[in-house]
Length: 459
Image 1 (spheres, rainbow, N blue to C red):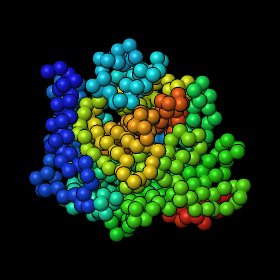
Image 2 (cartoon, helix red, strand yellow; image 1 turned 120 degrees about the vertical axis):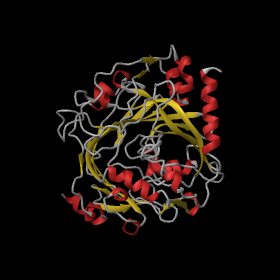
Image 3 (cartoon, rainbow, N blue to C red; image 1 turned 180 degrees about the vertical axis):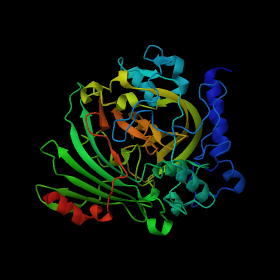
Image 4 (cartoon, rainbow, N blue to C red; image 1 turned 90 degrees about the vertical axis):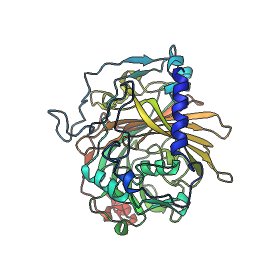
């Protein structure tokens, strides 16, 4: 049996074992048994990944991930690369893509076929993902009772931890992504750019403040209610956009209670409701290159799609992208015509959950189908293949993650959304020329109100 047949057989067997009933979301999923929960931290990682590596040794055992910062690192610096000595094992290019197709997403294959200048340097696999012990403890604590509710549109009996560490269907995997650990609060200055086919762009500079309420220490389901994240984004430049502010109260069950969103426009000096900051409405300052629900690779309501768990695959995905994160790079070093500069990219072989989202009959969205590739060690979506309503591949999304090891947590240092049909891409999260994000910043709930937008707009 050749490599491709092995890969297909592996996916089919995993899919048959794990995705039973996964094509159709149920109103409530069965909770885990005591025997299943006992696997967490034993043959499974504390968050549900397979602890053992693969039989060939190309994926190593998970041994805890990064548990302490590299020697000499100081909080506030751009994160030093703990794997700076690694050299590429090989480089996937348009010339040799056929050799590696069975471990590439359709989107990556198409990028290699479409762009002669694109390539994917593949490095040794480092299973760096880790989280605080309290997240591991909470995952074990809620695993027995966490469940999907309201036809999968919400999650019940869950707080702080990963709700479905041993998922039974695609919706559970996506909810693990939506509720994964990203810290408690964070303040960042970031850039985003809609890059033209010729490589031109206007950088949009923004400040973000986020309180991740679901993960707060001592949070309870009663205190949490239906609001999982408080988010505020202020545009700092260019001048024509400066002063625009977006405020979002992100709800868990968005069918029962849609996300609450407001905008402040300095020209009008008014705060307005923003019900359109959801689903397939264009993302702010994205030149139409991403939708609102593409931020963080996928966010928001899950009700417009059927979610199918295809299974697990070993794939080359962006990981440990510290080179791309470096403050030794300028934005112009990264942003090049057609795609970001491949000299600064790092891909590794990891096991990922594969989830296919298909637009429900009667629902509307510019994306008919989306295939998500979700890291088994962190529940972060790493890659997404996105199809238009002709069922033609349209866009490819990548989350170039690092472990922000002072916490620790896995999160993209840069998201790249490539539009293959337009020959353009949108980069979000550029931080190389800005001060590093501040974790555990002291945020107050009153800073996330419409009244706070008015006060901030007048300053």
